Image: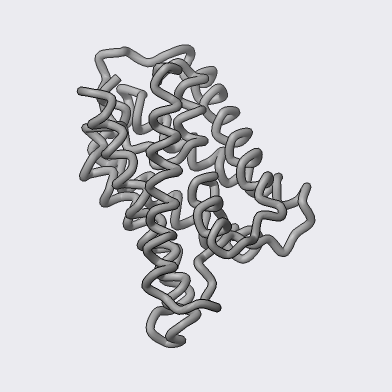
Length: 229
């Protein structure tokens, strides 16, 4: 599979995540009653699951710079392809926020992640949520003993659960691209480092812990979420 094809798949998947997820947040603010607040975590989880089934066999369906980093650190993804994936993921997220900003009038939130906690507590929450997200991802994506056909449901499920638990606290980003894109259009750059460092720490630790638990890298014959590699 060509890197350009995989990058386009990552662009589309991350675009879908931000456009649908942040779009639902904007809809809640603009049209109260049009969508239930409790439905927003489901939107994020469902769109992730759908895009995993759509392009998981093409790019591995990372849609998250922190996930790409963790796969690379755990030696399940080539470091030389990381910049292309990051560019596609950030590009897709920013383009989605750009279109949302064009569709909605000024003064509407674009779905930026906002924390009610101090910086250290927010960092800890994001790291913990990202740990469990990556723990599930690396299990279903790389371990031959996991049920690969359920990957989309499992990952979408953990995204929704994390959003329910952490959403009121930090916005439950777990994804630097998802946080950066709306923050750019809301001019809300303060504290953004939390949404870069927290997910990076959580996902990398999760990947290394899972590798240790299962006793080393899984068989390279297994090709699920990170199939192209």
